Amino acid sequence: MCKKDKPTCQYCNKNVAHNAGRNKKTGKTIFRKAVDEVDGISKYICDVCRRKRYKKRCSENGTVPGGWIYGHRDGQSAAYRRYKHAEANYCENSDGRLGFECTYEIRNTIQLDVDHILENFSTDDADKNDNDNLQTLCKNCHAMKNYYVMTANIDALYRMLKAAYRKKGFKFNKEELLNRVDRLLENANAHKNEES
Image (tube, rainbow, N blue to C red; front, side, top):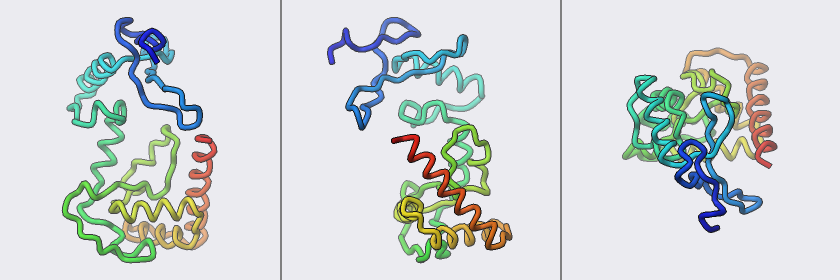
């Protein structure tokens, strides 16, 4: 694609809009858009304007720009910081909540992920980043948990929820836990349908 075919940033009208990758199905290039704060319309934005907007937002919120700013986490500062704060320095599957005890040796926190116990893919749900809905898993265990969700392994998910909530001090009966497993699978299916 030559430069004249690429959209221009609608904020500065100088630079080419930021390339955000390709659509997996169509193969077309996707150019980043941002919602204009004045008229609420989504407009093409270049990388320079995107960084300026982020720095302005940080100064207004009193937050310090992080190193991940210029990557895919742009605009998620508050939620991202809140949920990363819940990260433990070990894999919580060491209690066997996924059906096996994690014996993986953690040498650096980069080997750990913060996982949402009940996946809720809607960005307007304020409770999804609440500490009661977060657990720290190593990358291996996180992949296994996602595999259980994709394959709808109800027994494994029930066991995980039971152990995770017990550790957080909640006492749910079997029916309530099964309802939460159903909710988890419904959210995952809804997200899968949105993507397809």
